[in-house]
Structures are given as structure tokens and as C-alpha cells.
Image 1: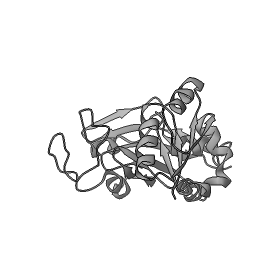
Image 2 (image 1 turned 30 degrees about the horizontal axis):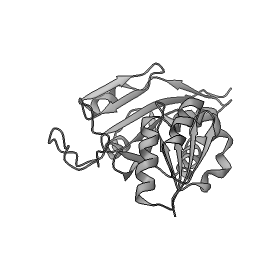
Image 3 (image 1 turned 90 degrees about the vertical axis):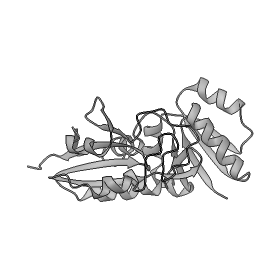
Amino acid sequence: MARYLILGAGKFGRLALERLSGQEAQAEFLVVERASQALAAARSLTSARAQWLEAEAGAFLAESLNQAEAWDWLIPAIPEHVAFIWLRQGLLAGTDWETIEVPALVATLTPLAIRGREGELYLSRARHLCPDDCAEPEVCPVTGEPRETPLYEELAALEVPGFRTAVISSRQLAPGVGGFPPVRLAALAQELADLGGKALVATACRCHGVVHALERRSRE
């Protein structure tokens, strides 16, 4: 019996709940959503074995670090980079790490790269709207273009001068539903704990990803 932590009760959070519960009737879910109306709406639309919590995702993760092993999978279904907000509000809060702009070299990996307000990059191999039930095949079902090497592998292999890279790979758990083991967040923090200089923190699936950059201020 799998245990899932779903962050977000909007369209994609509800799709994740419906599809995962359809695959395994005995699966257990905790759905975290900061908007009470969205939480209530999602709750009324499903009969899955779910618990519901009104909370902000980053704060919840920071407070629940020691409970990471309580869930087998974390499903990010919010418009934020979950790994990054967890780091900033969790183990790196109050430390000497600061957010910087992701180097432009990273944008060369995909046809579409959009820079966010904190200098992060949102990467996509698709210029079209993907089907919400895409199974991440090795050939794009819309364009017929090859997708043999996952984006998370390309990010991990990319050499960016002056940066170390940590990548969380999002795995397909159901059509259109991706996630990763939440214990991976603790491992990510450990990777950065003893690291100096600059780091790229990325989460990606086969075709899409988000990358933030951090720099550790020198200690005097």
C-alpha cells in the first residue's frame, strides 16, 4: 500500500488523487492546500482514502522534515519549485546561502526556457500544451520528436563552470502524474550542507524542469 503526499488541491492535485487512487484502491493520501475553498472543492469530488490539511506547502514541509518517511511519494501540484521552497524555509533558512540567477547556459538545454522573478529557469522541450495524461514516452505524442534522454539526466550531466548541480528526478506514477520520494529532500539538503561556492538545484521529468541557483556567502 503506497502513501502519497500531494501538495496542492487544484486541477493537477485532483487529477493526481483520482488517477493514483484508481490504480490502487488501498492507497493513502495526505492533501495539503493553503486555499480553503480549493481544499473543500477537492474533498467533495473524491472518495479516495485521503486526509486533508489547510497549510502552506513550504511551511508544512519545513515543519514535517522528520516525518518524511511517513510518505512513499511526494506529488508537487503547486506552481512553485517545491524542492527550492523547502530548502529556503527548511534547513537552509537563516544560513549563509542566497538566491542568485541561473546561468544562461542552462537555458540551452531546451527549446523553451522562461526566466522567473528570482532568476530561476523554467525549462520545457515542448512549445505546445501537453496532454494532462501524457505518459512521458520516448517519442512526443504531439510532435513525434524523440525524447530518448530524460531532461533530468541532461541537467545532471551539464557542466556549468563554478557550479555544482543537484537534480531531483520526477518519476511517472500515473498518466500525467509525477513525483519523487520525499526523503530525497533531506538528501538534497545534506548535499548542500558542506558545499561551498555555487549550486544549481533542479527538479525535472523527461520533458520539463525548473532550476534555481544558490550561492554560499563567504564566511569571515
